Length: 195
Image 1 (cartoon, rainbow, N blue to C red):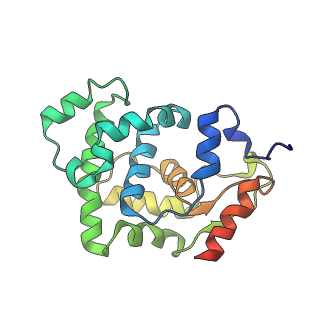
Image 2: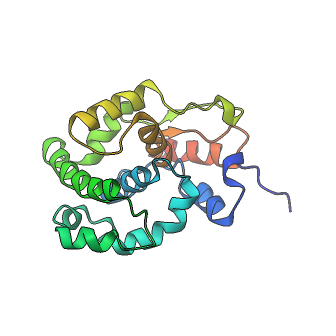
C-alpha cells in the first residue's frame, strides 16, 4: 500500500500524524473547541507543538475539559494546584493568562453572540485556501493574524501574539496551510464546499 503524502512537519510521531490527519486545518465553529485550541496555542508560546499535544489530555483534566465558564471562576487555590501539576506547562503567567482569557472570551460572546462569530471575522467568515508547495513558503504571520492579535491584545488577552494567532488560524481551519502535495489539502477543501 502506498504511503500517504503528508505535510513534512507532522511525520516525526504517530501523535503528530493523527492530529494532522484528523484535526489540523478542519474548520472549527464550536466555541468550546475554539477555547481549547486558543488555550493550547497560548500554552505553546516558546515551546514545540508536540510538547503541548503530549500534554493535551492532562490539560483537559486539569482545566475542566476547557470549560471557560468554570475556568473564569478559578480562585488562587486552584491556580496554585495547577502550578503543581507536572502534566501541564507550569508557567505562572500562562496559567493565570488562561483564567484571564476565559473571562475575556465570555465578554466577546456577550458582545458578538459567540466567539466563533467574532474570531472568524478576521478571515471574512471563510477559510483562506493557500497553495504552498513547501513549508518554507508558509508564513509565520499574516495581515489577518496581525489584526487578530492586535484586537485580542487590546481586549486584554494574554499570549496572543501574531505568530500564536496564525498557528491558531491554521489549527482551526481559518486557513488551509496543508501543502498542495498533502493528501489532506484536497480533503479539507472538500469540507469547505460541503458547508
